[in-house]
Image (cartoon, rainbow, N blue to C red):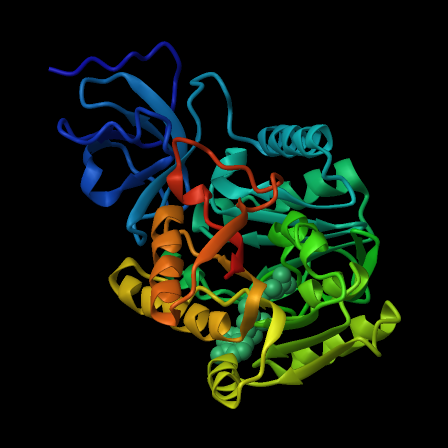
Length: 401
Ligand code: SAH
């Protein structure tokens, strides 16, 4: 017989965990999967706040529910007294902002990194005076007006834009949309990073328009590109390429399959007066690198920051093959004693596996590696030790002997 500790009145739905589930939830993970839930009392609309209890009736937390999603409940708080209302979102956003300021990410930062800021499925990037938001689950999407009001209050930004044109929303039964959440503004903005300027297309760029997670890693190449001939594949808007020029590279060639990304990369080179050093071409990196290795082209430094290759655990082999193949091709283009800068942005490939893949590529290329730098995403994308998927970016620099 279960006794629910009921000193407060809650008119919504109460959900109970099954008796035998792992200790992930108890250890702080905010996701409850459909197969972890047992009984329930009361009813709720999709996206509503519900209370979660353990099998024997101990309060676990409050979160939002979506019967259409495999992740049935995402917890927002474990404090029974904390009400989920507009003030709750204001407080969480203020806390996240204080944390960013404390660790030194102010002008541009990932202001809210979902679960790591105790706001599951919410992403907010701050590009100086502009904010770009993604609400990737129904239960957080419902609070968009409160979130926007909180952002207005804390930042008085020049503009807020919604980039909810992402396929994961379909897992929650939501449509893909994008548009203004403030007065309309010019969505082509410029941001400063490490002493360089970058054009960002908030409305049409990839994800939120700019990859802030690599901002510290871009600085990490400074000592290995001086006087170098550099090749960057998967360059997007040329961010690593421009950094290479800034740190003294002799020549830089950036490749991306997206014509629009390459167009912005060229404009970024002009904006920073590096258009004589940095050239960009639209090309499939797999084909170009293979061809050039055959032709005997060689570079002092090769930079690779490919896309995820897979979005699902079932296709993990596809990602492994992709990473191995591109790194093998990249390594073959590095002069003996030159450097390979390589990254992987999917949490489906954990750090140890990524290193193994690079090791396999080196073996096939008959090269030995000397590790220079091994790090992860910038700290404005915090890693929660009880939520392993929050560590997703791998960034490695090796000397290729
Ligand atoms: N390094 C960049 C982010 C790269 S994202 C930054 O820090 O800003 C990955 C990029 O790979 C995207 O711009 C995408 O257009 C590009 N891409 C995907 N497949 C490709 C391929 N086969 N060849 C070249 N580029 C590709």
